[in-house]
Length: 326
Image (cartoon, rainbow, N blue to C red; front, side):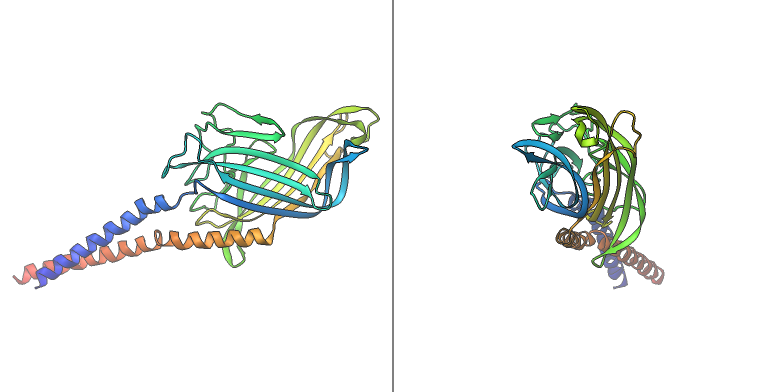
């Protein structure tokens, strides 16, 4: 009888260990993936913002700097299933991001961009080859690159599953390169435990633009001015899923004319945009739903491994006792 019991215990133990390993190393990677067909809208808002806007003056588009604006920035991210890298059940997704920023009072468009890239569905990092990757910040113009080169390196839309308390490289569209997002501590957003990450850029030249001299206080029809960019971006990330729960972006841009130094130019944008409450609440719900699914494949495998080991050990002990008695 003891001999039969020992075999049953050993069999149950082996089964529990095998099931735990299967859930952790096969089922978890299949579930912990960013979706191919994402369709998500995020809204960030800010007040007291200084920005250049292009207004109609006597039916002529004329740039002018306005202060104390209420601004809304809407980001729409969708999945592109037509790209050749996309396979059902594969590890690569292609996402398109459209951003539109407007002045609330006038409805005037302040800024807009459109881009596409391929990302690893587990780590959320941009990857190549990516046939359809591009950046468009001016209407009708797309900046492309060799499909085998990562055009927009780093993280763009989320953090990896199992985010760690360390620095990550995140892509900055204004700089057209990756910057360091350093871990800045633990926090709580709407009762959800999150990690806080901060990235900073101080007075970086990002290009040159021909502008009316009147815009920057120079008595000339037009002037080629350098564009300088300063930014402090903070995101709050749910670590199990990598979902960005909340975020704020304190940004400043100035036009620096010949003979001026950075910091002495004309400010063309200055303010902070934050994800609004509706967006944050939706992100919290998304993260909580996914945490529940992932916990089945992170917590229970550990339980099964422990229980399986105990059962197998108990079976071996019973078998040895039975052998000695015989």
